[in-house]
Amino acid sequence: MWPSEVSAGGRVKVAVAGGAGYVGGDLVRLLLGHPSVELAAVTSRSQVGEPVTGAFPHLSGLTSLRFGDQGPAELAEAVDVLFLALPHGSSMDAVASLFDAGGAPVGRARVVDMSGDFRLNDPALYKKHYKTEHACAGLLSKFTYGLTEWAGSRVAESRHVANPGCFATAIGLALSPLASAGLLPPQVTVFAATGSTGSGHTPARGTHHPERATNYKLYKVLEHQHVPEILGHLSALGATTDLSFIPASAPMTHGIFATCHMRCEDPSALEAAVWAAYGDPARTPFVRLRQGSPELNWVVGSNFADVGLIKGEGELVVACAIDNMIKGAAGQAIQNMNLMLGLDPRAGLTTPPSLP
Image (cartoon, rainbow, N blue to C red; front, side, top):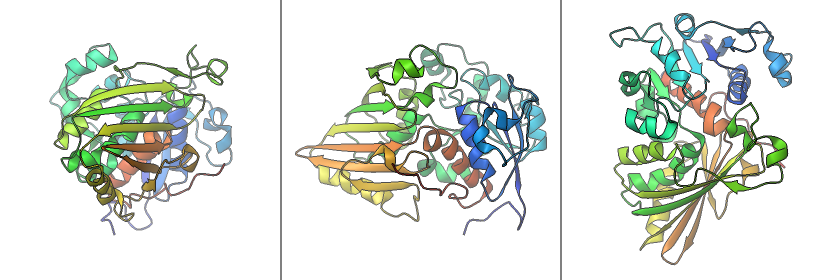
């Protein structure tokens, strides 16, 4: 049992700021099915006054909400949990309004930020990877990095959580057991492919369906913005490694498949560390271990992360498959909310994917 702040029969009031995009849509969908949540508000700068079901017709009959234009500070006064599903760079301004001049929180809401604006503690790293100055660098330390399976106790005690990036989630889940056990090799090469939803709702030449449906390419090779957050997380677990990250744009809408390859003297020891971390479903209910390769079809549409192990002579491959919009974004954000409120971490997230 988890001690909960929600009284028997009570419901948590929740708002989503920036709810008209892909991440916002999945947040709304999952929150509408959460047994302890009342979705009180969804905002959008571009669709104020329009019904939420106009943007998300698949939710027809499930909500009568219309997109509002309330500011984050107003929402934080009115709800228990505020999700910021805003673009990188926009979230900083929203967060700045949630603190007073002395750095104290404004309003009663716990906050889960979905952007990259508060995942890094170093403003210089933020500027390097996001190509802009951080507008409120003094607030970076207010946020807990919320890779849920590896930050659960810290998340439970936090009022502000930075939800990890989708690539960072898959790679972090694959490598964290080795980092925690002191077994992470000094060099790891990661090749990971992602679906087009990760590029957001507005089409661009590289993400528009006709450009992507029959195409495959590498991008941001060795310089992706998720690398410093992955390294920061691994460092917090006591490990230092040289991470070579090669991301790819794949012809699919949902999913991330990360393949982590490493050379090591004793692959069986590394394999055992992964099993020790994730072998108990009661402790990590959303991470499922596989012998051999996982498959995206086994996780897309769900909050599950499937981790597969392939052992060779002096080398090991750890693969992780997730839905980039769910476990890589909206689902993990709700997992973090559940922990922050003392709810069962599985609440609202146990729907399995469909096959094929």
